[in-house]
Amino acid sequence: MRAVGVHIFAGSFTVGIQRAGFDVVAAYEDLGLGLQTARENFDFPIIYPKEKWSSHVPKNISLVYANPPCSAFSRMGLNRGSSDPINTCMFECAELAIRLDPTIFIMESVPGLWTHGQDIIQKLNSRFVDYQHTYLFSDSVLHGSPQIRPRFHYIASKYDFQIAKFNPYPVPTIRDAIWNLRLTPQSEELNHVSTKVSGQLESLIEHIPPGITASEIWRSFPNFRDSYYGQPFGPTRRGAWDGPGPTITGGPTIIHPEYDRFITIREAARIFGYPDSFHFLGNISNQYAQIGKAVTCFMGEFLGRSARRTIASETEPTQREQFIDLLPYTEEAVKVQKLAWYGSQERGTKRKLLENYIG
Image 1 (cartoon, rainbow, N blue to C red):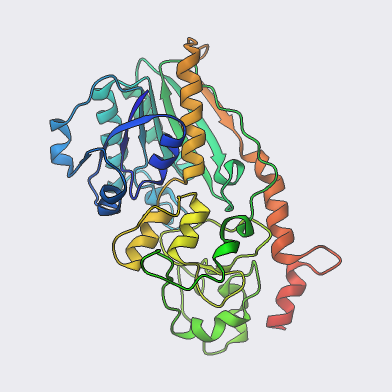
Image 2 (image 1 turned 180 degrees about the vertical axis):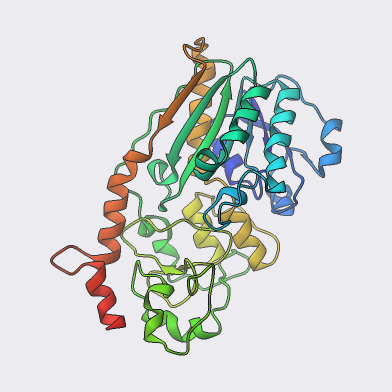
């Protein structure tokens, strides 16, 4: 089965789609983030910029998968919503897919698109007239990634869309992904480098226990009044070895469980499911963004296996729309995460842990 990607960034979605057994024959880019990295690691043509998209129209495409920017509906983007110009990327993905006439179109986004972007979803539905419309909520932690990363997927399918089997247990942990890197010296050749901790965070970082953000203990440091969307240092948080971590974003925000530094590019890539042979290009800030703004390899593989199952079934849709919510399955993962971060009731709650630092 042949597939093409749109806005693949560095390529984690593509890695997952390939693991699911698809032959990715092309990708289309316009924003450029991760373009050189993708060209370094894949041998299919990457059509860039958007003005050249119409010059390459492969035939017999089963799947078009897309990861357009979702910042307008993300918590980090303060839910700027439907009017944000960046949303045109979603329609460009859809229009390209319609020209390619795939069996299935999958577009990844954040849950905010469902809660704040119903007008966009309806516009997408009006383009995919002869398709079933599936609204899928899932989380990468259910498919092998040691991070809580809930996502919404818009899916248009000519057949009745069916999800692949998955097993959310045991809950993946940061230890599973990066434990054997802890003694490996940092190396640019291996992408095993982290951005420098500087400023007031440099003196604060050693006091941050697992699961706690810098903003939650900032009152211990009276000279510290930096603000990030109203919260000091925003989502900067230390991970814990024996639980999944928080969502990796487009910058360095996750502190290593053991060392007073941010996780490295290679450690972030491991958490996303990239193979160690995958090489990232660009400066370190750009590399963090290439990873954090994309779909995890684990989620990509799950979506790819679901697409293959759907295509193989050739089952006619029984309903025009369907809603699939897998997020309740994350409950156990969240429990494991909180246990790793804050300990059991006997050892002390998050409040007690904070009291040790805030007083």
